[in-house]
Amino acid sequence: MKTQTKLWAVVPAAGSGSRFSKTELKQYQYIQNYTVLEHTVNRLHTLDLAGCVLAIGEQDHFAATLAFQHKNKLHFCEGGAERMHSVLNALMYLSEIADENDWVLVHDAARPCVTTDCLTRLVESAQHSNQSAILAIPVRDTLKQVAQQNLIDKTVSRELLWQAQTPQMARLGVLKNAIEQALADHIVITDEASALEYTQQPVQVVQGRSDNIKITYADDLELARLILLSQIPS
Image: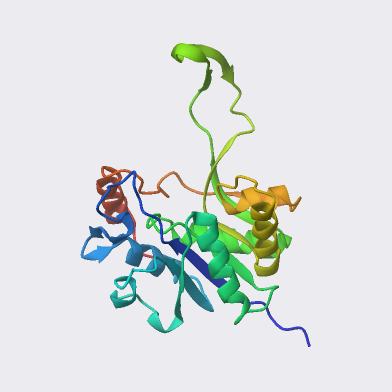
């Protein structure tokens, strides 16, 4: 009898967040009495997850004290110097407790506003097509390629361009192997899809929403607060 695959989540949360603040980590800023990280992880748990692995900093003793929902499904591992190292560490941790054919969602710690509807459509699309998938939105604005001295070189067609978001979803074994190969070959990978693309794995886009923002700068925190206030709980 075929074993049913499980769904796991990975949240890389070991970054320094230097663009947000040199002294404060963006994932531990508070919105409505909860940290950004709590909002993010709790939103992921609106899915039927087998578990969620948080890759945190070596000196981070705060994450484990937070009041996460479904805390019994949380796992912690040490993150790495860069995002991809944190993700790989989490995937290696998962490899000890999960099947290589299980599905994994990798989601930014600082994206607390992703909706349950988007999460559900992403999972259903990937599982139905049996292909890796990411949330993304079509580029809306006119794009300019700028040469020297801030002079416009040309207008870039946006017809085929999408702005990547997270979560990004793939089979555990496929994603782990892709990241390991890309890192071994010293390829610059900015997200999970980059590694999958490098190893010739098909990745589809599932249209997300523009309110799935990533908190990068300090003023993004207020925008995230307004978005969370406006979203009707599922």
